[in-house]
Length: 115
Length: 148
Image (cartoon, rainbow over all chains, first blue to last red; front, side, top):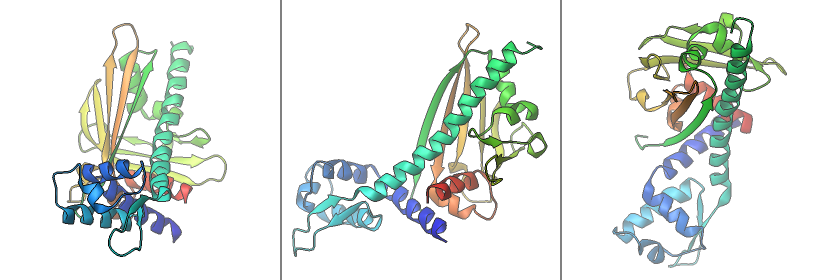
């Protein structure tokens, strides 16, 4: 079913987002596309390590990489990120709406006949 | 997949009600049934089981007024510190399911008001593992389905 696929995709996206280095890479890509070398600059890690992170991000659909031979600049792909954010937003909304209702309930309880 | 997939959310509310009352709203079936879930969903008291002690069941079932679809919660209390803190999560089935769950903290503001802080950690892969068992994860999954 599509829902299982959707949840699976979310799982991959969340896994990709769980790493602080990968989040930093995404933040950097938000400024515009960049090569592996440019992306590696701010981090005390090897180019290979950055490449590995980029592969994870690519698999999660969070970035796309150019086909041109060596540079293969990476750029942000908004859709997967949006889906993850939407899901979290929906989850948060579920609780927030419940907590609004809790507020109504508490008010009714205090003003109610039994105090 | 052993990779961490944690996402965290925090929600804070201040209620104009004493802490004991907020605690009761979470721990008494007749009360929780009146507010649980989104608007447009009802939670029959008959579906509520609140065995408020560590390891006790925290179960209820919300039903959509619009189409009758169900959104069950099947969780277990992990920590119960009346009237300060309540934490719960999916029933453990031997791995590290403790990673997914929620903690609600109630702070007496001293003027008749109560600050409630809700913190939840979600591991998306747990939602997949726990599909068969239902659980807190199933609520997460239903939400994902609604989006799909």
